[in-house]
Length: 269
Image 1 (spheres, rainbow, N blue to C red):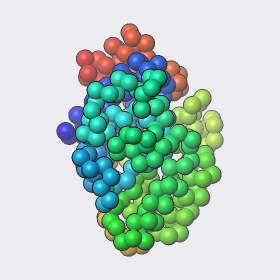
Image 2: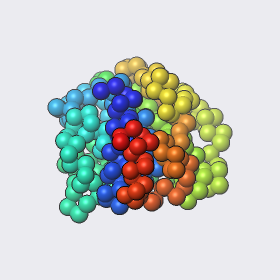
Image 3: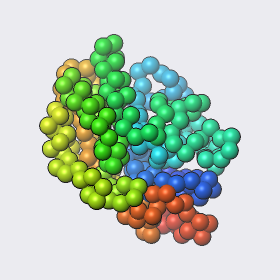
Image 4: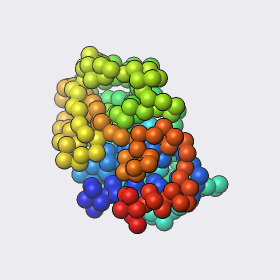
């Protein structure tokens, strides 16, 4: 499946999953749908039939509250049956609201408490160098998550050790749970902050697949070089007109009527 089709499928799943489960974070999941689609359709070296393959690329969904998007892209990529997605956020389901790795093929690490993904990713990249393996490690962060001090501790570590196979992707939609990032804790000059920690920074339209593809591809080399940060400029709630840039949809699930309108807008009918 090409990345555009995959992103469309992910958005449809996310809308249905959050509506059925009455779960939150639909806006955050829609925001990163294109980032995940480009990764899984055109960048990663993974094998859904062998999710524990030692040389696979690693993906850490640090913004774990957008787990619906990760589950959807994994299901559409063949890691597990998409038929189970309707159990998301239901009692007894293994698909919890925040990302869990327990019993879910393709999920590397449980996340939800923000600020933990980049330290784990830096550790994985360090491990690859120490063992001479050529896997790449991708960490998807929220912009609001970058308020956490642990993000910058890990950024300093990765920059110091020149972990060239580590890629941090920031879903830079400029909104947090209760307001904008500017209102909550200003990030700018955001790119310069990453550069000052020794990172190669690439800015891209986070919904433009042709821009994202080269930004996300880094060489498979354990030689020392700067880790990469992709500042992906996105829109929270992307794809659904009445959800875009609306903080309301950080926590609110769509009603049945809103679901039908939203599905039509993302081309799911």
